[in-house]
Image (cartoon, rainbow, N blue to C red):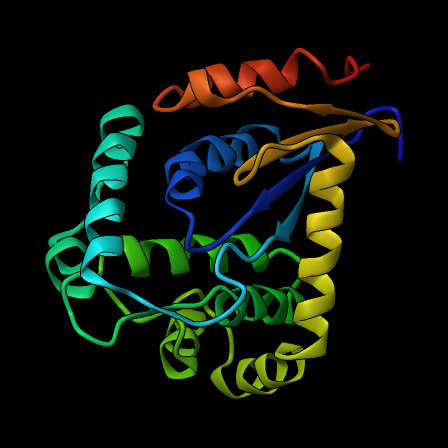
Length: 219
């Protein structure tokens, strides 16, 4: 790692509401510090097994999402709150969207984060079933990836590769003492710092300043 370079490790889950709330923070860091900051994604699998949504679970999620929207300003669409969460048979399962992010990264190193954002928006705003391969393939096309190549990469990433990725992500979470998703870790010259970010929800500029203050000076 060069003296002018650092890595932001983003331990997340595509179906984590607070990660969706943190998305503007991460996006701002990428946009404003991208020449000095590499982003690495670590999907931790909030729902490691398929979990069918129950009415009680949906009610709990809606209450949590209202709090997330209030704090972060991130919108939750009617197609999600009144559609996906209210429909019978809705399944929450983190491994397919995590595999989709890995597949996107395989096709283009910089495509992983746009794929994650597309999945979050599709889930929380459009109410799409992002556990389904066809939906994920459509999202890959929307961010400019070739559908056939994505389908091949997705099939390859699904299974052992995704499980190994999740295991490594959870190990990293434990190593840094993270408290769940999202956990954001800044690595500067091999020294890791868990970044406090809860006070920055809805204030992406403040989060960027927090990171910039820890980066080596540019000469």
